[in-house]
Amino acid sequence: MRIAVLGVGSIGGVVLGALCDTDVDLVAVSRGGLAANLAEIGLILHTPEGTIEMIPPERFIVVDSGAGPVSGQVRGTCEAAIICGKAASTSVLAQLAEELLVDDGVAVSIQNGLGHSETLAHRLGRERVLGGSITHAAWRDSEETVHWVGRGSVRLGALDGGSPMGHAARLLNALEEAGLNAIWCEDVGRVVWRKLLLNVAINPVCAIAGVRNGALLEIPELWEQGLAAMSEAAAVARASGVDLGDVDLADHLRKVAEATAENRCSMLQDVMAGRATEIDSLCGAVVERGEAVGIPTPANQALHALVKGIERSPEFS
Image 1 (cartoon, rainbow, N blue to C red):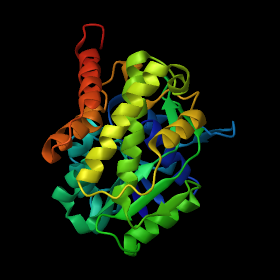
Image 2 (cartoon, rainbow, N blue to C red):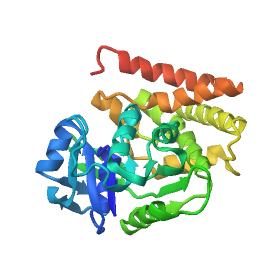
Image 3 (cartoon, one colour):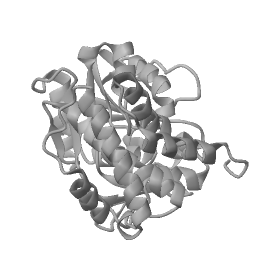
C-alpha cells in the first residue's frame, strides 16, 4: 500500500515517522524549505519515550506542493491520503490528494476544526472521504525536528457510517501497525465535534494569554472563558443534530487540561512562530454554524475576534 501524508508539520511528522516503521510505501507532501530538508536530510523524530529516530530521505518520496504539478512518478499511485496540514491549506491539499490517489483511493482529514471533510468530499466524492481526529501531541522546533510529546489515538470513520472496507480498512491497519492507536468509529461526526469542543476551549484561550494548557486550571478567568466557548459549541452541535453522547463538559475539559498541562497548544505555537492560526475553522466555524441554527455564540465571537486581532497586529509576522 502507498500512503501520502499531506502537510508534514508537527502532527504530520508524527504520522509520517510512525508509518516509516511499517512496510507501506510513503509519499511526504510539504513545501519550500521543509520539503527540501525532508528530501536532503530526512525526518528527525523525538519519541515520547525519549528516543531519537533518524529517518533517512530514502524511506519516502518527497513532493514539494509549491513546485508545480505532481510528477508522473507519484501521480495516481496512492491508495490513501492523510491530510495533516493547517486549515488554510485544505483546498490546495484536497487538489493534491486528488492528483496523488488512485481512482478509488480514500482521503482522511485529521486536522483541527470543521469543514475539512466537506472540502475533500466536494472534490473526491463523499464515498471516498473519511472523517478523522487525532489526539497525539507534538511540536516542531526551529530546526524542523519533530517532538512527539504525548501519545493519543487516531480515530477514523466513513462519513455515512458503516464498517471499514477496502483501502479504508488497509489504512486503518497500517496506522494501528504504526503504533498510532487507530480506532474505527461508526459515528465519526461525534468524534470531530467532541475534539472541536476541546479545541475552542483550550487553543484560543491559551494562545491569547500565552500560557500552557494547565493554566486553565490555575486561572479562574481563563477556565470560565474556555468552558463558555465549549458550552456554546456543544449547544450548536446539538442544534445541528449531532449526538455528543453523555458528556460532562467541565469534567471532560478538566481531565484533558490535566493530562496536557505542560503542552503548548498548536494555536499558541502558531502565534509564537508568527504563523496564521486555525481560528476560522474553530471558533469561526462555531459562530457561523451557530448563526445558521439560531444559537448565540458570544464567547466564540470574542475569542475569534481577539485571535484575528493578534494575526493582524504589526508585531505578527
